[in-house]
Each structure stands twice: as structure tokens, then as C-alpha cells.
Length: 361
Image 1 (cartoon, one colour):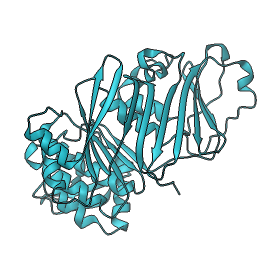
Image 2 (cartoon, rainbow, N blue to C red):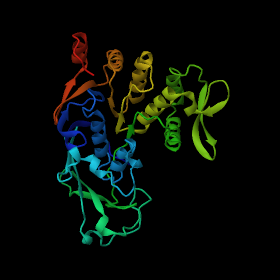
Image 3 (spheres, rainbow, N blue to C red):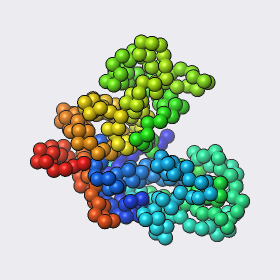
Image 4 (tube, rainbow, N blue to C red):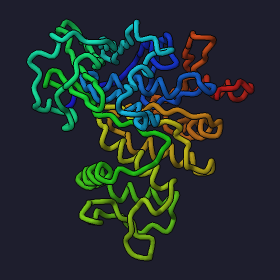
């Protein structure tokens, strides 16, 4: 069973476009704003890495989301994790939870010594990719090493050992992770994962609630269900013409369904949504935020969402003015040169800032 987490502070050093940033005062629902290249997506990625700090595959996943998986397998994408690709300095993260616990994660990239390969096994490590293979050429290999520390426990070390066309994963089988989902602006459906989360929704008797919210975008929706398509279980929807894959309803319906399913799945964890307004007309953004608030009510799921949209922030304000039981905050990332700062606003401060014409996006 995954641990629960509620993040109150995050420190980042030497990661992506962020040389150093200290961020604190997070609420349950957090909107992250800022100019282009301020580091909003990098901020979400930093959170994501810290939600699976012993998982040596997460860094490859965030690079794949950015399209870096299309680079030749013989060229490691790990250097792109580092600020200005400075691999001589480790990436450092520090997370403080609401309970006051400190969790540190460092990432370094280096050329290994031959002795580091002694005793490696072809057996899969629990919870990591099944595509691990033995290294054949030590001289051309590189290592991405994650070192995770929590409290007074000894550091847990996991590694991705990379050689041309091959990756070997090495580490402790005792995984530390928190239920979390990263939702990118790309709304491509992962049918198997979506179906499993829909099944969880069904077990909690929340299908009617799910369908009611989807009707905000697709008013003709009659029902949803799980079905088989080409021997694969997927979510189906009926808009009066029979059952068809939910993904055919349109990008807005698919994106909202992914957000709602992620919120149900990530109890005790965190949902990260990059460009939350993507695929939604501004007129329905209040209902989108209402749906998000409704799906996390009573749960301890935490949400971080980036946006460029003033309408998105105003829609959130209109919802959380009426629902003050949820701690809602807006954070703006400002970057001057390599110095990143995060400024936090609670609901009343946000309203004043918008009324006085201060640019929050």
C-alpha cells in the first residue's frame, strides 16, 4: 500500500530550467502561473520525480512526455535533466510534508567503474520495467543514480545503467512511491490505464457522478461502461447512437475524463496537470473546477495545475469562493536570469491582484 503525502514545501537545484528555487505554502489545490520558460512544467516534473523517488524509470517518462524518447537510443537523454546540461553538479530536491517530514532526493550522471557491474542480475526489480537487459559494453555506459533519504533511514540507491540500445535497472526492491498522476497537455489516451481507473470509480459507486460531469462537455451523453475492443478493455460512451470508444467524443471529454479518473486513483497522493485549461472552452472552466473540487472532496488528494489563462484563474476563484473548505492557492513563478522565485497568493490576495490589474499569468 503506497504511503500518503501532502507536500508543503519543495526546493529544487540544477534541474531543467531551474538553477535554484524554493517553493512553499502549498494548499490542496494549487495553480502555477508564470511567463513562458519560467519553469512551470519543470516544477511539475520535479514534484513527479519526488513522488516516486526510488523509481529509476520516472526520469525517462518525463523526457518521453517532452518527446525526447524519439532521440536515438544510443544517445542518452539524461543530460537534458540538468540545468544548462551541467552534469558535474547533482540535481538536488528537498520535500517537506505537512507533517514536517523532510525527504531528500539527488540525481547524478556519471561514467561507472567496471566494479559497479559486479553481481548484476537479469532478474527484474519489483515495480520497474520488464525490459531490463545486461550491459555488454561497460566502456560506453553511463549511470543515472537516484539517492533518496527520508528521516534517519539510510539512503536508498537506484540506478539506470545506460549503454547503446540497452538499459539495466538496479536498486532496492523496497519501492517508495505515492499514488500520483502526471497529465500532460497531450491528451492521447492510455486505454488500459483509463479502464483500470474507471473500474475503481465503479467500485466506489461514482459512475453517475462521473457521467454528470462529462455532460458539461457532451450534453447528449447517456451512459458509460467498460467494454472490449480488439481484445482490449476500454471505456465506452453512448450518446444515443450506441456504444463507442470514449475517445471519439472529442478532446475536451477525453481530457476531463482523464483528470477525474486521476483524482479518484490518487487518494493520499498528488495529481499534476500541465496546462489545465487545454481542450476546454473558457465558458466551461468553472464547471471543470467544480468537478475537480467535487472529486477530491473528502479525500486527501493534492492538485498542482499550470495555466497561462486568466480566464482559468478567474473560473477557479468563482468556484472556491463558494467552496472555502478546500485550501486553494495561486503561485506565480518569476525568473530573472537563472534565479527563480515563487510567489504565493491565497484566495483574497488573488482577488485583489486581479481587481487591481496585476498580471498573474
